Image 1 (cartoon, rainbow, N blue to C red):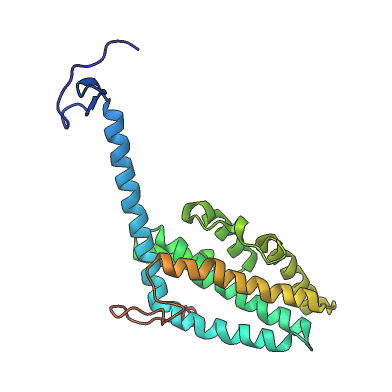
Image 2 (image 1 turned 30 degrees about the horizontal axis):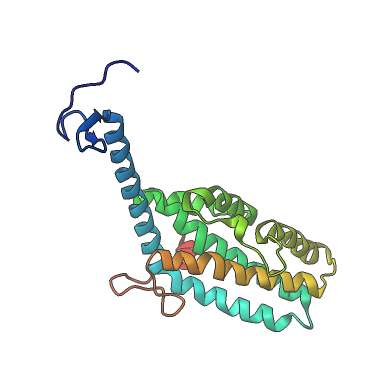
Length: 232
């Protein structure tokens, strides 16, 4: 291992580590100090990212939920008699949840320039909805979403099931393929899990009052991402 450096006080070359007798055993290298600094920096970046995600959801969450919630209610009401329509409406709600309550704030939170964050998130979430699911999967580890733990009561993993249900929805809408009640029920349960397993915990993590209260915090100005989309 080579010669150990001489013992120096904390803040000069490292820090003193003592043995069981209370005497200095060795001096840790500056690597340890650098590692600690890296942890502090990482925590600061994470806190900034969470603050930016919180700000977006606080300002826009109520406008988004005013679109999502009626769709979920409608999908549930349609389920017994019109499973195809129920599936279609429910997956529209799921796509809004994924795009505007998850991908947009989480992706924007990682970019610290406001204009760039808005442009990047808007371009990333424009077009194919399957790209939104791909982006959220890429954000999974960064934000510790644990998509693999998102399951229905029967143990079915929600994430791959959603892709299958989107295919069923596309077949129904574009080719008139029949949809059974089981598929529609699965879609409704997937939506419930997205809300309970991802959106709710994210709101709690960011210190927001939803679902017990409004998304909007007292110091934020309400926004509407759909209004912005219409203007662009």
